[in-house]
Structures are given as structure tokens and as C-alpha cells.
Image (cartoon, rainbow, N blue to C red):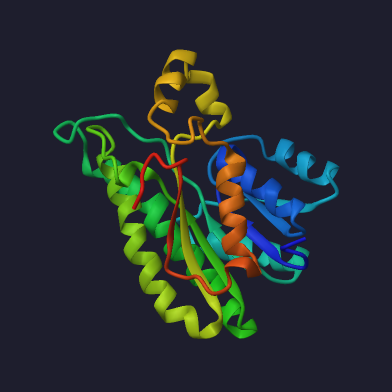
Length: 250
């Protein structure tokens, strides 16, 4: 029970990787706050999965780019569980697949807001309590795409790359309070959405490029996040952990 008596707030945790992190953290003893940003995923299913396995969880819908809604989410979390010890910034908006010439700043701004601004707003909300208790974990979910930029992911990879500077600067400032800030960065992951569109041929082609010869699962990313969230990673901060079977090595 690596996270016994800890409370984790995980943004965008009603589907995919976020839901996987919520399940793994609950299995490790954490009380989990599940967040839906828009209408993505199925919050009731994630709640039922956690509770049926003996875990504790609540669900809060909140726009994580809105400081007032995030403050209300924190209030609900504290009312239910007393505090928030761990923040996982996981949510990612849909990525418009366009060339740079065809993209608009409005599309870029959405990527920046739902990645960088959301982390900013959520961190500002949880840090006062973490500082007071002199214990906290801040974890962001990134992508190996920042090492392998594609021709149609401009705003997305720019926003994700900005999280490196955000996390490292934050790690320096909050370290004296026994708060760590780290990033987990998965490669292609077999979420429900990916499974629905990935053909066997495309998966086989991808896996030939991966030294460990398989595609990642949500549990792979969740276990890396669990390491950073627990005392196992207590002396590691400002780090960026690739979770991709060796497809990228940095």
C-alpha cells in the first residue's frame, strides 16, 4: 500500500491513461479524486471499478483551465478526504491533425490552455496545502512525441515541451517544502480509443520499432506515476521519465 492515507487528484481521469492511473493509485491505497473536464469518458464506470475493488473515490466535473472551478474541485476533495497530497496533470484535448500552414492560433491556444495553463491553475490550487504539510507530489503526463515531432502535431508538442520548463522550475521552488515535481512520458499506449483504431498490421509495425517489442499499456504509465507519487521516488524531482519500451532513449 504505497499510497496509504494519501489523496490523489487526477485530471482527465474518466478514460484512458488517467483512468488507469486512478485505478492503480486506488489499489495502492490512495483516496482518488476523479476529474472529467468536458464530457470525455465514463466517470461512473471508473468509480465503480475502483469501489468494487475496495478503493475510495469521488468524481468532480471541472474545467481545469478555470481557477474558480478548480478551487471548487479542491474544496470538494477536501470535504470528502481532508486534503490533496498528489496532483497528476493528465488531461489532453483532442489534437487537430493539420499542417502548420493550415493551423490557427486558436487551435494552438487550446493546446496551451489545456496543458500548460491547466497545470498552472491546478498547481496554484494544491500547493498551499502541500507546503503547509511539507509533503506533496506533482506529476505530469507528457508524450514521447516531443522527441519525435510529427508534421501535424505542432500546437500539441509545443505545449507538451513547455511542460519541461514548467516542471523543472517548479521543482526548484517547491523542493524545500518536501514537494517533488516530475513527468512521465509514455509512447503509444493501448487505451480503449487506440485499440479501436489501431489495426493489427499497424501495431505489429510499431512494435518492431520498440526494443521491448510490445505496445505500452495504461498500467505501464500508471506504475511509473506511482513510483513518483510514493516514497520510492522521494529523492527524485525535476525528472522526465520515458515510458515507451526503449523506443526513445534520452
